Image 1 (tube, rainbow, N blue to C red):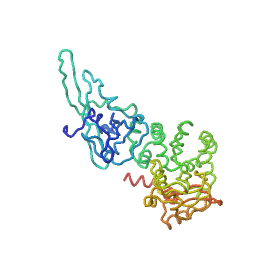
Image 2 (cartoon, one colour):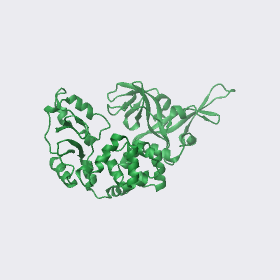
Image 3 (tube, rainbow, N blue to C red):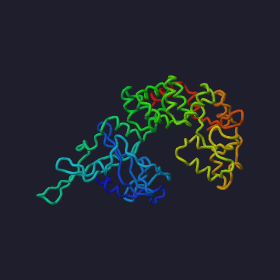
Image 4 (cartoon, one colour):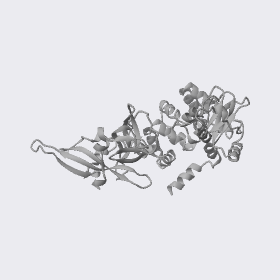
Length: 407
């Protein structure tokens, strides 16, 4: 087994390679979190220096890790600054050189495991012993279980939150539902704002309310700020009126105004399903500029599938709506062509239309999203097919899906 290990001391000197094998940075540390029960500590990812920034590279993004370096599966890189979160440890900073009695941790051996969730885990720890009487150090390699206290979390929920970091939000929501209510709330406190917002979007509104009940107003505002506008409006609609007003007052003025507009539409209408957070550009913008916009990683897949074209302003509600350009059309046209020359005239829908009318329109035209316009032809937002499915499935479909996964 030892021959198959890759050691942290070596990893922290390897180049970070793009999908084509070209160096784009260098690994500086390894992020680990304790495992469940008797499971080995897991490698969540790596800290890398790239473009004068210290960034996080998830282990799920790494295609190969060997003597040549860590090669990415795809070309895109998240350049947001690295921030260590609760429950996480850095091998270089927190584990190496730690004292264990009269011995010191000199290195950590990482093993690779396959299966449905492949990745790396802590397998061995190398200890060194030095003494004044014997100037030559002695080494021994031990299983991680023999030094498990090195990787013990500060709190169980902090470690759980760290382990959930790389899971899909719907899978995290399933884990959250399996916990007693008090543990759910402890986990909600341990999750970072963005991750908790993702989880809330995957839960029924009644469960959302119970999960966030213990959060103070400042933390709650930070979490809700990370949610999609349509999901946020659905959640706020279920809150008691006084609590809803407190949340809206604590929000950014522009965001609060957007949510208030969405709350004006009755449940079951197109307006209640739409999101104003869409890609809107001028007819004079070029194909190259449009491709750069939809390439931004924060866009949902269904939103980035098309660019809506309208006169200024290019945020909802826009100027006069002109049409839409789908990403496949963008790939076929020359980069310098303007969007106004490759518009597609597709149907739009009024905010007062029923959710059934929206579903029929999307299905009959094979659309991923449909624009919502007012009587003055201004674009108010768009409705994506996933939001229509969410609205047309039975109210308890998330619970049924969770039971299906569990069985």
